[in-house]
Length: 404
Ligand SMILES: *Cc1c(COP(=O)(O)O)cnc(C)c1O
Image (cartoon, rainbow, N blue to C red):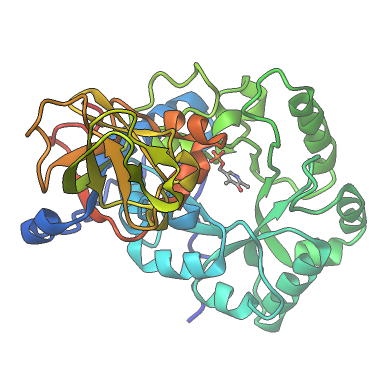
């Protein structure tokens, strides 16, 4: 039953793992479903693989993991993780045990799945039984994991996380120091990785980066010798000393550069198109949408599209965001509703948009970065918020890339 202990877990030396073919062919969405869908989220699997390879190249000679928490940042872990596996990835990180349990059957046995948030008391047996590797974030978690292993005479694999200055997760410097005095405890666990997380990696000049690196250097020397990991996406793009043995990028895999102006090798991986469900002519002075916050200043044509804040399109973009059609900007007029948005389509010749036409919300004319900037947030939040109601299309190698 317990698969965790001796046999499995990735090794850091094998760049030449056999290229077992894994199926990443979720059936393309049924054409009828697509034709009637209110909106279509297209995910480019070739771009996901290409971004992984680009990051792995930047991280080398460190190995490169894939962070697929929050359903691969909203894009679908069941398809994204196998795509990364195909590109050579063998180490995966999710946040919750439940995410790890869901992901486990979707990846071959030589893929290791780590649980970033650690384990709740009592969750250890389920984690061990599934062969998942917890990130131990505190002294009590170390004790509990050692105890569970001892019960079965096993040294169970785990990651030790050290807090190097973010004060979020990981053993505090004091806990690391007390752990150093407890060889009984530390020897009861098979420490596969020692990691920490950077708070300011997206700001290359921030002094916190060097400070965290120094803390990590000091504290990791107090724990057993194991491969080390510090860099998220931003960290991969910092200087080489941050890379250590394993990089843990998330957002950059999904085509978003963590650091503005860097990451020119990353490809966009998604596009979002919304269906026009009504077009109407309104007279000057007509109110549009909830709260009557917009009045047509002149006779206008208004199109309603089938995406709203329930789909993760921020209500904050009421009267300020836009959609695009063939490169023409169509401003959002009125409030973003739960299930729909109203657009000023007067710039388009009459009849261009019809019932069933698709307009671009994310794509070549409007990136995730653009949308996030208009909302005063980060692309992570927009991406992970994209809802569950979209019809999803997965592009495979040979399909026209999503960014074109
Ligand atoms: C989310 C997360 C990552 C990935 O971060 P990105 O900024 O998306 O690259 C890496 N490590 C930890 C601990 C995380 O929580």
